[in-house]
Image 1 (cartoon, rainbow, N blue to C red):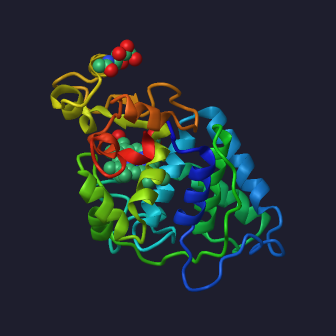
Image 2 (cartoon, rainbow, N blue to C red):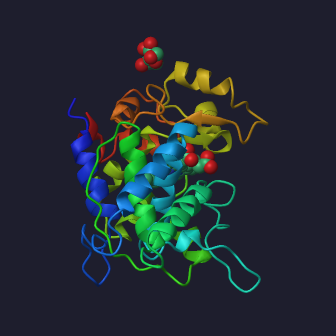
Amino acid sequence: MALFSNTFLVLSILSLLACAANGQLSPTFYSRNCPNLQTVVRSVMAQAVQKETRMAASILRLFFHDCFVNGCDGSILLDDTPTFTGEKNAGPNANSARGFEVIDAIKTQVEAACKATVSCADILALAARDGVSLVGGPNWNVLLGRRDARMASQSAANSNLPGPGSSLSTLISMFAAQGLNARDMTALSGAHTIGRARCQFFRNRIFNEANVNASFAALRKQTCPASGGDNNLAPFDIQTPDQFDNAYYQNLVNRKGLLHSDQELFNGGSQDALLS
Ligand code: HEM
Ligand SMILES: *[C@@H]1O[C@H](CO)[C@@H](O)[C@H](O)[C@H]1NC(C)=O
C-alpha cells in the first residue's frame, strides 16, 4: 500500500495551512523581538497535552477552523459580545471547538515574555504544530508574521467548513474554495488520526451505511446507541487513537472510517488511488 507518509502530511500541513497573506511570512519573524516565543509555546503545549492528550487534536482543529474562514487570522478566537458576533457559536464550532483556554494560557505567557508583539494567529499556528509533534507526528518550521483579525464571520464559518455528512464532491469543492486541491484535502484529512468525535456525527454511518466494517460498527454501537448518547465520544482512529501516524488511512482502506466524510476518501472515488 502506498499510504501517505508522515513526511507528506508534514509538508502538506506546513504549506497548506500556513496560508500567507500579502506580507511575507518568515520563520524568523520574531527572532529579534521575541526570541523565546517558540520555547514558551512549546512548554505550555507540552503541559496541556501531558494533562490531556486530546488537546493536541483540539488545538489542531482550532487552527483548521480558523484558517478556513478568511485565512489564518485568529478570527476563531474572538468572543461574542452584545455588539459583535464571532465564529465561536457557528454550527461547526458551538459546543465542539475546544482548547481556547490553552491558547489563552499561551498568550498570557507570551505577553509576559514579550508584550504586544506576537499575533494570536501565529500563536495558534505554533501551538497546532507543537501538538502534532508532541503526539508522535512530524515537526516543521512555522512561517510567522500573521496579523490578527479584528473581525470575524459566523456566516462564513457556517458556509466554509465541511460537515460530517459531506460527499466527496462537496469536500473537494469546499477545499477548492480555499485554494486546496483534492490531494491536499485528502492529506489534511489525515488530521483525523487523532482526536474524538461525538456519536451524533457518526450514528447514521454505523447504523445505516453499507461500506462499513461490521465489527467496527458493532464496537462503536456499544457507546453510540440508535437513540441517546449524542455527545458520547469515540476516537477517530481505532488503532492508535492518540498517535499522529498514518493509521487513519489504513482504517479507511479497511472500511473503518468514523465519519461518512472520512470514508468518502475511500469509497470508489477519485481519492482511492492515493490510499491503495
Ligand atoms: C475533510 C473535512 C472534514 C470534516 C467533515 C471534519 C469534521 C469533523 C467533525 C464532525 C469532528 C468532530 C466534532 C465533534 O464531535 O464535536 C471533527 C474533529 C476533528 N477534526 Fe475534522 N473535519 C474535517 C477536516 C479536518 C481537517 C482538515 C483537520 C485539520 C487539519 C481536522 C482536524 C480535526 C481534529 C484534530 C478533530 C478532533 C478534535 C478533538 O478531539 O477535539 N479536521 N472533524
Ligand atoms: C472487519 O474487521 C475485523 C477486525 O479487524 C476483521 O477481522 C474482519 O475481517 C473485517 N471484515 C471485513 C469484511 O473486512
